[in-house]
Amino acid sequence: MSKIKNAEIKYYGVRGSIPTPGEKFKEYGGNTTCLFIELEDDIIIIDAGTGIRVLGLDLLKREFGTKEGGTAHIFFSHTHWDHIQGFPFFIPAYLPQNTFHVYGETKEIKGLDAKDKEVLETWTIERTIRTQQTFMFFPASTQNMGSKLIFNELNFNSEKKINNFSVKTIRLRHPNNSMGFLFNFAGEKFCFCTDVEHNDEMITELSKFAKGCKVLAYDCQYTPEEYVDGKIGWGHSTFEAAAEICEKGGIENLHMIHHDPMHDDQFIKKLEKRAQQRFKNTLAVKEGFNFFI
Image 1 (cartoon, rainbow, N blue to C red):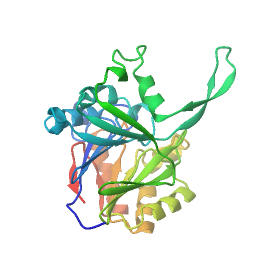
Image 2: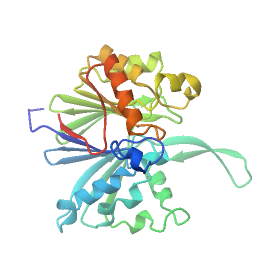
Image 3: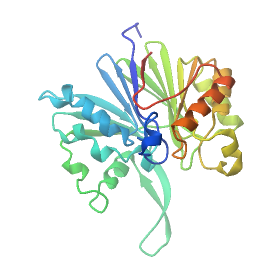
Image 4: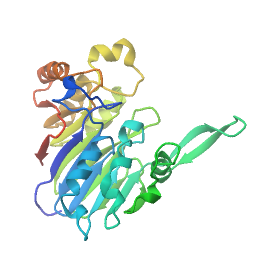
């Protein structure tokens, strides 16, 4: 790829598990996961947690709110509630002039039939997103969304090229799996790995996957103490694991994301200082933070 304009990246939601309103959560924000990337004419969105509602309002001030409309690519790391619950409130998706290319994994999961017999069910990204908006759960279905929704299956350990960027994927350790993304913008690399639980193998794999990245955005939901005291197996990680990945992979900057709903602003500030002692170029990300890469 030839060298082009830097990509702008903005965090619209950095909270994990559930939104957290209230005075003690104002500085770092209470919205769940949503990331916005813009490079030239390409717009990328990662996950549709509650942060995507605010992103939608910002997009309405641009081409997405005009007669011409806009186009964006939405990548889902996985479809647990805190990563999809904002999509029904994403206003640009209700406007017919807009187009959204949606990417996610097809999962095989165990379910029950009418006689409570265990069966294997296939859930595509399209089925999951549409089911969330059936009338039992939400008054407006995806059929009420006037935009053009184009659903695409995304596999692990694959690479997809879209105009000015490419994206590689990796399987992350999380209940029913999660997907990590490595974006390449004309030679600059950004890695996004939310909802991942570390072990030796995962640390090694991610250090290779994200090698040489400018930034690694990584799930640092728990303190090391919380993790060993009852959180093992819950599907999340710590700043210590993140620092080890950065060191082994020669990664320049660590962004701590997916803040625990029990961690208020003061707690996260203290946690950031601890993390910086372990890996200097560490930032506990605040909702609304943006940077260029």
